[in-house]
Amino acid sequence: MENYSIVLFIMAIMVALSAVASRIKLPYPILLVMAGIGIGFIPGIPSIALSPDVVFLLFLPPLLYDAAFNISVPQFKSNLATIGTLAISLVFLTTTAIAVTTYYLIPGMTWPLAFVLGAILSPPDAVAATSVTKGLGLSHRTLTILEGESLVNDASGLIAYRFAVAAIAGAGFTLWNAYLQFLVVVIGGCLVGIVFGRVLAYFLKRVHGNSLIAISAMALAPFIAYVLAEEFHVSGVLAVVVLGILLSVYTNRLFSSTTKIQNKSFWDILIFLLNGLVFILIGLQFPQVVKSIDRTFIGPLIGFGFLLSFIMLVIRILWVFGHNNNLKKAINRRNLNPERYKFKIYSAEKINWKDALIIGWSGMRGIVSLASALALPITLADGTVFPQRNILIFMSVVVVLITLVVQGLSLPLLVRFLKMEEE
Image (cartoon, rainbow, N blue to C red):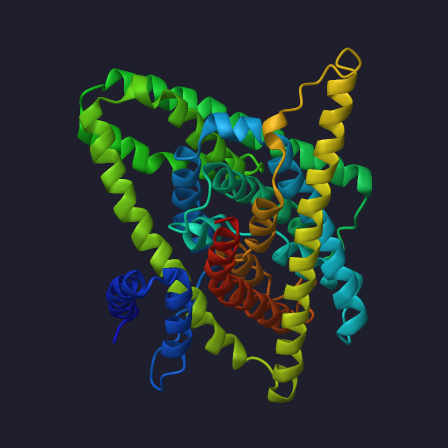
């Protein structure tokens, strides 16, 4: 059976399992990941190589764009401090924590290799967060924080990843250069999103009333924005996110009511198919990476994956509670002396402990971490083999699966428990 036939077969299974997940009230990403693992171990099933280029170009732009387009802009603004600290500061802290743990516990790990693994696993995934939390009855504000964080943190993680891989290749690393490049990549990505969004908005105004042209342009927009940003060596992720938010602000002026309904239906179907395919492909990667590892190392590495997942979860929860406590103190200082503190701090950003716990528990890793691991070069510039590549890929897949299955399965139970206590 050809690979395209296998993909069609997998998509048919994905649709059927999604219906089953809906009936048994289980987050469908969890069922699809487990099904992907099971399918991958069936004898005779051809291996499906998940190309990083395919993920970054075909999967990531539409998924990020849809999430950004549907996010609440007022809620995003009012929770910007929380989203910013989760998406930037926490990502770099998690990268460092994973690197330190990996360096001292896995034999043969150098600091650059440890930081590569930290950069791969540090950003929670937008696709996983929105898919697993959908339908759990979380507050709109909690969902906005999770989605907003996941939309921005990919840029932080991918920048750290580039620096770590460059250090392994011998390009060197300087802190001031890292900060400068981070600013260039972030600001440049935002500018590309803004400029392209303005151009697209001008075009959509000229074709107002033509639903076919408008929806087609919207379908191509995230791919074009991503490619343009990457050509300028800035963040394609942020370009797509900014584009989605910008168009959501203009949507009432750009589309007729009929076009808006048709556009939403088109994107609902597209995102459902892409989400399902992403999660089942994640599961399919596990049997393939298992074959590349010495069997004597598989057990210890899986145990180490559980340890890393636990460390990431604890750091995230402590960070969310610590940030919320700092917000409360800052708001109290501002209220006592409003003339001294000129910057506005939104009182709505204070998070109760239940929402903070849910936000902390929702840091699943997903397709971005997996694609980053698979994108590791096979050889370095001098022709030598990339050190510990199979170990890094195996660890990344294991941690992605652990966070998706363990946190994804327990999150609905946690939400129900907190609601029960509240009642």
